[in-house]
Length: 56
Image (cartoon, rainbow, N blue to C red; front, side):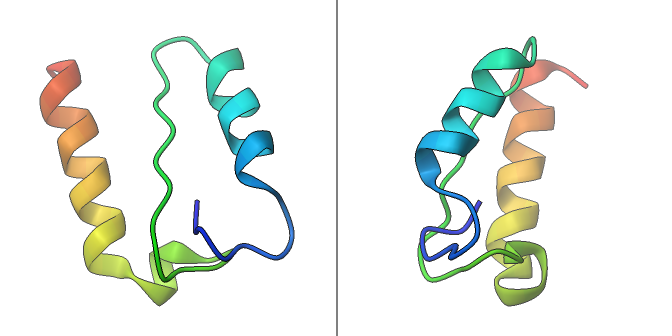
């Protein structure tokens, strides 16, 4: 989730991640509601780290 998301709050993202087993919440600075478009490098780094840490 982007730190500058104007649609949902970081608290919402954290609650959502808490509700999903094995999920992880990542707050990306300098991104809004579409971090995969606004900061693709940072988004994919977070995804890669999650996959690497989870052994997937």
